[in-house]
Amino acid sequence: MKRLILAALVSTFAASAYAQGPTCKAQADDQKLAGAARKSFMDKCERDANKSCGIAAAEKKLKGAAKTSFTKKCVTDSLGT
Image 1 (cartoon, rainbow, N blue to C red):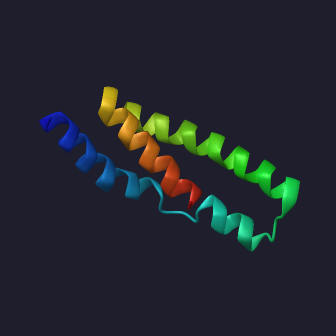
Image 2: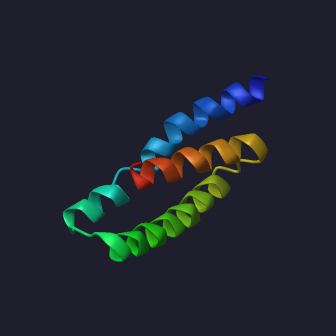
């Protein structure tokens, strides 16, 4: 239980550091993307976010629930959804 709580705290604080740039949603809005172009942009942005958040989790040597929690929050913050 302590590990789960620690994982949640770590992911909350650490993920915010990786979501410093504009979110995918904000970028799509700025570019006024709609329809298929927006979907394609958001899909690519999500893949990129998954990759970078996975790398960040590996750098922090997170495993199991801590890694899952961190990655999920990091990607969500990057997408801006």
